[in-house]
Image (cartoon, rainbow, N blue to C red):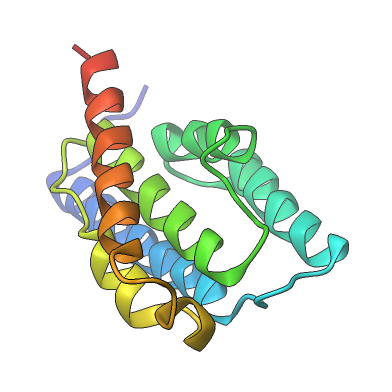
Length: 144
């Protein structure tokens, strides 16, 4: 087995970080532009994308997370606001696995929801945020 040079390892770490950032930009971007009332085909496309990433993604812990997410109750493809919230919750699940800081889901849910969702009853964003924090705490507890 050949050992890798320090430069090769540093390059691999930089590439891995860049791929991670790019993937999150892609996934959050898809969620932001997802329809308020998606078709069955659009809902399936999200699941298919996650399934494909599970197979080909270069980060093994991340790849396994895509499969878990695809088949979890956290993934909600019923509307734009649901998918935005789902992606942010999933982002935090991966961050926990990688010992990275959590992403503030309220930023995504408040700023990037559809106009209809923004005009929802007062307190909905806070309830969504609180629900996300509860899920994240449960995930953290399961890793202890």
